[in-house]
Length: 314
Image 1: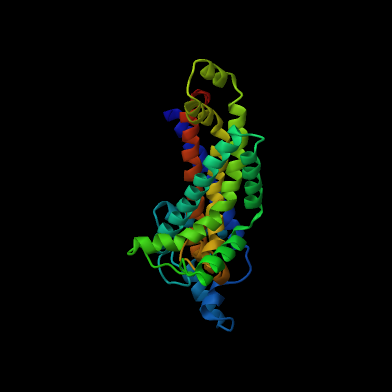
Image 2: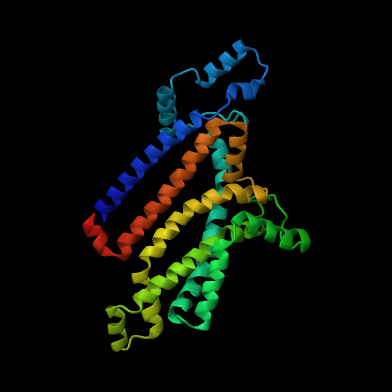
C-alpha cells in the first residue's frame, strides 16, 4: 500500500509541475501590460519601466517562472496587483467558502445519485428505472449557470425562501449554509445525473456476476448483497468519474459564485482575469489544480482499498 501511494503521489506531483509550467506560459502571452493597468494607459514610459522592474516583469520568462515556483514551494505567491495584499492571504480568505460549496454540491450529487442509481439497477426496465433515466438525462442537459439563475429567481427573488445573493460569513453558520444551498444544488444536479446513470449501469452488471449468484445461493439477504457486495464491486467506475467531477465543481464555481455573488475562489479568478492580475490568477490556478490533484490522489487510494489487485500491480 505504501509503494502504491508513493507512486501515485509522485505522478500527481509531476502532473502538478507540468500544469504550473503550462499555466505560466499561457498567462505570459496574454495581451496587455499589468503596469499599464496599474498606472493607466497614458502613463509615463519611465514609470511603466519602474513598475515592471518592481514586479519582476523585466526578467526573462524562465527566470520569472523559477522565482515564482520557488516562492510557491515556500508558501509565497507574490502580491496581488489589484488588492495590494499577499496572494496567499487572499486565497486563504476565500478558500473555505469554495471548499464548502464544492463539498455541499458533491454531497448533494451523491445523495441523489446513490439511491436513484441503485433503485434503477435493481428495477432495471421497470417504471422506476425509466423515471430515474429520464431525470438523469434532463439533469445532465441543464447548464449549471442557467439552473442557478432559475432557482435564484424562483426561490430567492420571488419566494424569499433563500438569500438572493451575497454571503453572511461563517460567524452565522446557519445563514451561511442557507446561502450556499441553492448554489450547491445548481452545481450538483448535472453531476448527480452522470453518477446516477453510471451507478445504474455498473451495479446492474455487478448483480449478474458469479459472486452475486453464489451469495444468493448461500441465502445472503438481498440488501446485504446489493450494498456490501454489488456496490463495492461496481464502485471503481463511479469513483473515477466522481474524482473528475471535483475538478468540474471547482471550475463551475467560477460561474456559480458570480451568479450568486459569493466571495469565493471562483469570483476571485474571474476578477483576476478581467483585471489581468497575474499573481492572483497564477495563485488561484495553482491552488485549484492542487485541490484537484489531492482529490484524485484520494480516489486512487480508495481504488486500492476496494480492489487489492491494484496494490500489487503498482
